[in-house]
Every structure is written in structure tokens, then in C-alpha cells.
Image: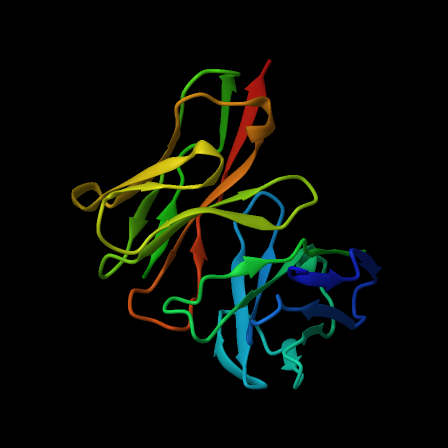
Amino acid sequence: DAGVTQSPTHLIKTRGQQVTLRCSPKSGHDTVSWYQQALGQGPQFIFQYYEEEERQRGNFPDRFSGHQFPNYSSELNVNALWLGDSALYLCASSSSGSVVGEQYFGPGTRLTVT
Amino acid sequence: AQSVTQPDIHITVSEGASLELRCNYSYGATPYLFWYVQSPGQGLQLLLKYFSGDTLVQGIKGFEAEFKRSQSSFNLRKPSVHWSDAAEYFCAVARRGSTLGRLYFGRGTQLTVWP
């Protein structure tokens, strides 16, 4: 049983560019959350998708957007990249049938903005 | 506002020694509590969780944690540390009763193990 997978593993972009990160949830999971982990910090919640809609959002600007597909996979898009967007982006999946939404994390995508 | 505090940024212990990692939270009501571990190049792995009931919870890899309501703490412990335990450890909380499962994390404690 494959766990949560993310692609690409690493990515280097230039300021002002746009980036798309991808996530496939664990089998049987229908909810995907995205987190940003800056160097030396704990993960910060970006948003969560369920039934192809954004269900809740953290304190991130509109430059961060996402999408969920009918097969529950998800994309995170970041426009007009800043240097400060350099971070590890983690995808987590969970089941809506779980009481608390216990989350399983992927290995992350390391984004470097130069 | 909810917050999670891990006061120790970096801890070093000798292999075989005991370990305690501290976590305090600030929340309107007792939240769900979690400890995660992150090894280099890896995602976060759940070690253990507390929802209700017995305040001493057992997790994977020989870890345990104790919930103390009076101190708003959820400290992680291990009686004898192995070299493979070297990693970063994160305490996290989620709002009780929520099905949304948004996690709030502390900044992490980096554990170094000496042979």
C-alpha cells in the first residue's frame, strides 16, 4: 500500500515565477492538507481540500492556491514566488471518516527560490 | 490563539540514556495531542496521539507521552535512546471535536544521540 507521494522531490525557481506541486493521498483517504515548513520551523497549515473544494485555509496569501481532483490527488500552486517561499512543502492525507482527521504525511517537496 | 511551545531547540543524549522532550500548549480547551518525528529527507511520522482516557499513552518505537491537564503539557519520553532515534521531533495539537484535523505544530526539537 503506497503511502502519500509527492512530486517533484526538489525544485529550484526564480523570483516571480510560478510553481505547481503535486500530491497523491494514501489509498482510502479523501482529504488532502498542505503545509509549509520553513527551515528551522514547524509545519504551518496552508489549506485543506475535501470533495474538490477548499475546506479551510491558514494565514497564507492568495498567491497560494490549490486544487483537488476526482481521484483525490491534489496540486498546490504558488504564483509570483518570493524568496521567502523557499521551504519544504508537505502534503498530508486523511479520511473524512476519521474522527479527528489523523493525517499521514508525504516526504515533501523542497522548493528553493533564487 | 492556539500555540504549541517546545522550549528545547536541540537536545543531546548518550545512547542508552533516558529522554524527555517537553511540549506545552495554549488552547481554549484540551485539544487532541500528537507527537511526530521527522528524519532527514523524510516526511512526518506519527509517534503517538492522545484523544481521551488514560493520560499516559504508548506509541511506536518505544516512545510514550503523558498528558498533564494542570500543566497544559504533553511531554514525550523514552527510557533508553537508540542511535536511530536521532531526528527532529514535533509536538502538534488539533481542535477537539473537529473533523477537519488542522494541525498546529511547535517549532520542533532536534535530537542528537552520542554513541
